[in-house]
Image 1 (cartoon, rainbow, N blue to C red):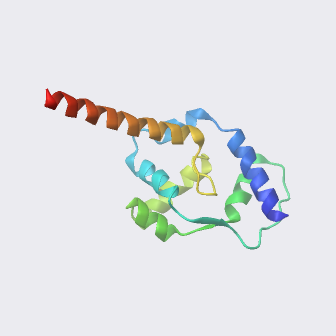
Image 2 (image 1 turned 30 degrees about the vertical axis):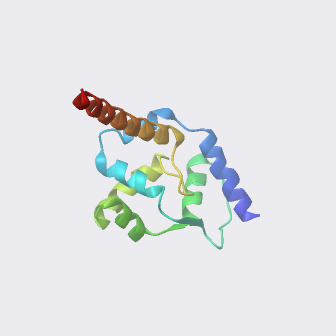
Amino acid sequence: MANELYYEKLNWFKENEKPEIVLFITDNEPRTRIVIAWTNTKTSVSKKVSSLNTDVESEIWDWLWQNTEFSLDELRMKSGISSIEIENRLLPLIANRIIYPDGTLNSFVQRYLRERVLKLFDAKHIKTASKRR
C-alpha cells in the first residue's frame, strides 16, 4: 500500500513537469555529469515507507526523497565529481525536480540532453564527411 502511494505521488510530479527547469543545467558541466550519472545509479524505495500526512506539494516531494535509498558513493564514482561537490550540487537538482527518486529525469531535461548528443554526432558526421571530399 505504501509503495503504491509512493509511485502515485511520484507519477503526479512527472505529469506536472516544468520545461524551463532545463535552463538549470545548461552550460553547467558538473550538474550535467551528475544528472547523467543519476540515470545509472541504483535507487530503491525504502523498505519501511513513512506515512504521508500532508497535501502540500513541496512536503510530498520531500517525503518521496525521505523514502528513497541510493548511494552517494556510487553517484560520486559514476559522475567523477568529488564527494563535497556532489553534496553541494545534488540538493539543487533534487529541489528543482530535475532528478526523480526512481532514478529517472525530468523529461524535458532528458530531451535536452539527447538533443545535445545528437548535435554532437551531427557535427562529427559533417566534419568526417567534409574530410573525405
